[in-house]
Length: 109
Image 1: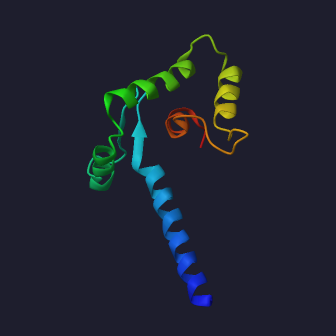
Image 2: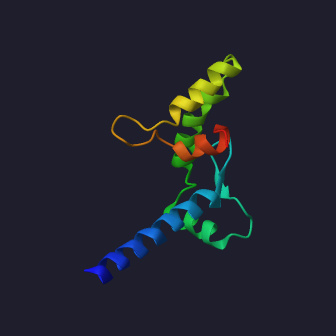
């Protein structure tokens, strides 16, 4: 039983490391584009291409999700609250659409 547990743990650790690297591999633009964070990151370029992460329909959806955050009529306090609440998980435990785009562009680090 112990070898199975160790193998499972190693698999989970590798998955978490991959997800962590994934989040830092991409950058987003206010007009909905996704790009590798580092120009020469071939893994990020391949991921964007193979998964179609920058196809026109996804860019349009991403742009629509970003647009409300660009409202000049929001005060700084309203904007910060809007971002903060958008980045919270939903009651289902899932995140809002294009969470990573909003987090990258507007989330405080």
